[in-house]
Structure formats: C-alpha cells, structure tokens
Image 1 (cartoon, rainbow, N blue to C red):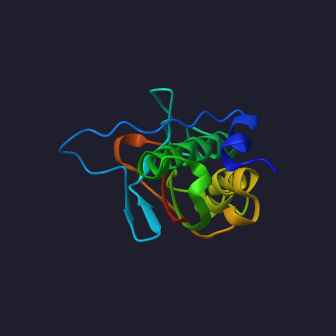
Image 2 (spheres, one colour; image 1 turned 45 degrees about the horizontal axis):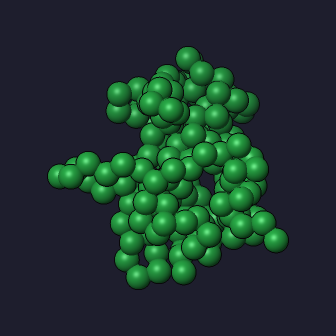
Image 3 (cartoon, rainbow, N blue to C red; image 1 turned 90 degrees about the vertical axis):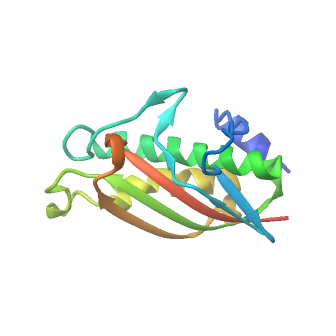
Length: 156
C-alpha cells in the first residue's frame, strides 16, 4: 500500500518542510494529537498567485491557487510532525477566496467550487482520511492573494 508521502510524489506534489522565521507567527502548532495551521497563502515556488476570482482569475485558476495554498498547509504540517504519513485525519478546512464584488451574484460562481481545489487534492493524497469538514468564504484578502487556507489535522 502506498504511503501518503508516496502518493503526494506520484501526484507531482513536492512537499518540503516550511522554513520558520524566529519571532514570527508559527506556520503550524501541535497540541495533543491535533495540528493547526496558520493561514497559508497561494504562493507557488516563491511566486505569489494574486487577484480576485471572478475578475482577474477564473474559477479554474482559483482552484489551482487553492491547491497551492493546500500544499503550503501540508508543508507547514510536515514541519511540525516530520512526515505526512503521521496524519490520521484531515479534520477541518477553512478556505478563504479573494472574490470580485459581484462574484456570488451569479449561480455559476461559488466559493465552494474554488475551495474544491483544496478538498479534491486532500482526497487524492489521503483518501478517506482526507475527507473533512469545511467552510468556504468569499472576502477581500490582504495583499490581493487569491486564496488562503487553514487546516486542522489529527496526527499519530
């Protein structure tokens, strides 16, 4: 059976531990058997994914931004626990989407569709352990980042 780490690699996801800067908020914190991440932004290989979904970005581009923010969450978690294979359950996801003012006025636009980029990736990597409770909200994000994700995971 393939481990979570192997599955991530098979999907082309490179997840390295995050670098923590002293004196700055932690990227993730463990308490007991839970790890809470700070909000992780849509940044890929040092390049910011910015813009408002529905104005500057399509839903598909928003989903890719959500996917990248999710990988950054997993990187933060890996920093705390050492290996994704120690994750037993993705418990909760909070997905925040930077949306245009009229984004939610259309039946075709939905912040849930954007955050599906996160949920789908978690299920691809973790299977049933990746099924989770979730909130997906549209708002204006600081510095015009497209997506920000927070996670709570259960670990061994």
